[in-house]
Image (cartoon, rainbow, N blue to C red; front, top):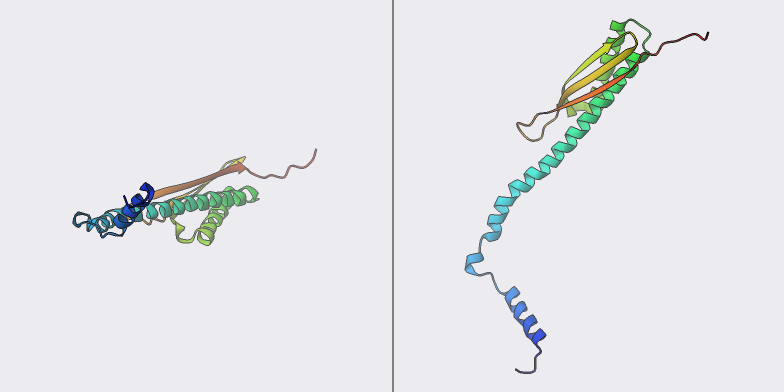
Length: 150
């Protein structure tokens, strides 16, 4: 040896190897990997976006059901008028806050003697073709009534 240490020889070997052009059999591997992995990565990104949209739509229909139930509980009118007011408030909330996030919303209001149940359902907007995700929100509570003190 010419006085070089083993570590210096190894470093020199790896520098030459890393600086050398790829061999003929390695050419095109990166392009092939990119072609195969790009659709998978894009699909995973769209799945994350789709999950976020579904989660937001679920939250919107749940809060719309709560708003409708709040109106139906406080209405001092007939059951049919209270149900119509609750339905109108839920649809208005979806239009205002949800916008295009909730497709085909449906509001169902059931007002009994002592309680009210509001169910809002629809489909979350879809990014991936062919994927339809249903969202449902439900709220229930007692009807507010004035009871004079005895």
